[in-house]
Image (cartoon, rainbow, N blue to C red; front, top):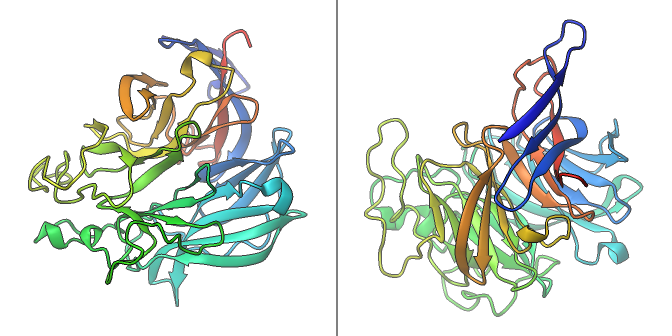
Length: 389
C-alpha cells in the first residue's frame, strides 16, 4: 500500500510531495534528491558527497548538495546518441581517493556515425574536467543498430573490472548456434574481464585459446543491463533483457555459455512465435531467476548498508518495461535465490540503482516524459529512506 500527499500550485497539475510504501521487511518513503536530468543513465558517489550522473545524450553532470550544477564536466568523448546508445556507465576506480580515476562506457561512433560499438575510457577527474583521457577497450561488436550496448561496469574485490556488451540487436534467426552471441571471435553478447588499465588477465578462461578473444569472461548474453559484484562473496551477478519475456538474473561464472539465443524463455515481439530451440540445453546455463513478462532489466545493486538492516545482502534490480516499472528485491544465500518481492509497483521507470555512502538506496528515473510533459521529459534522482528516519 502507498500513501500519497498532494498540494495545488496555481493551475499546474498535482505536485507530488512524498510517497510512503510498505514492504515485507521495511516501510519506506521515496524522497527526491535532485531534479532536471535528461535520460539519466548511471550514478556514482564521490568521496566528498557529490554525485556524478551520466545523461545518455552525452553529458556527465555533478550534483552538489542536492543541486544539479548547470555546467557539464568537460572532456567527455563524443558518443553515438541514437536509440539506446550514448553516454552510459560512470564508475570510480577502487582507489579513486588516491588517483582520481573514473571510468565511462559509451556508444562509440565510427566515421559519420553510421556504425557504433561499446567502448570504455578511463580518465582523471580534476576541477570538473576529465584529463589524461584514455580509451582502454573497444568492443569488436560494430554494426548500424542503435541498441543492446550492455555497457555496465563493476569491480570485484581483487580490482578486476567487468563490463557487459550486448548482442547489438543481432537477429535471432536461422542457425541459432551461429548467432554472434555464440561466436567467441567477437564481443557480441559477452561479459569481459580486464585489469584496471585495460590489459587482459592471463587467468581469463579463454586467454590462450586460439580464435577466441581473450577478454571474454562469459558469453551467450542478449543485453546485460545490470552488473554487480557481491563484495561479501566476490560473486558476479547480472540481469539481462530477454525478448518478449524471459528477462534473466544470472550468476556469472568464467567460461560459461548463457544460451542466447539457443535457449531462453521469451518469444518474438508482437507475433509471439518461438525463438529458441528450447528452454534448456546441455552446456548452457539456466538463470537463477527469469521474468515473464519482461521487467526491462536495468541497474543492479547488492545492499550492504545499515539503513535497511533486513535487506542486507539482498539484490535490487531495476525495471524499465512499461508493464513492470518496479524495483525487484531478491534475497540470496551465497549463490542461491531464496525469496523475491516487488517494490514501487508502477511508480517509476528505473534506469539505475545504487547504494549511497549514507546507506540509502538511490534510483535514477528515466520516465522519458512525466505525465504533464511540461518539463520536456526531465526526470529525477530519488532515494528510498526508512519511515521514521
